[in-house]
Length: 71
Image (cartoon, rainbow, N blue to C red):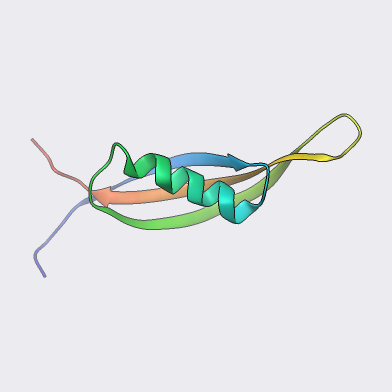
């Protein structure tokens, strides 16, 4: 395996369904503009609540790495 360098970005995905869907939304959106995605790491899970404490959205903070192509 050749030496490589990877960049890591942090994204927050949201979903009204689940944390899994929130994380998948973050990865799917990243894949539209980034190439060579390698690893997605779930860093934090939380929920957005309304005034009565009902869950409005699930949120997943995700670190995504991709191969860095320097200039």
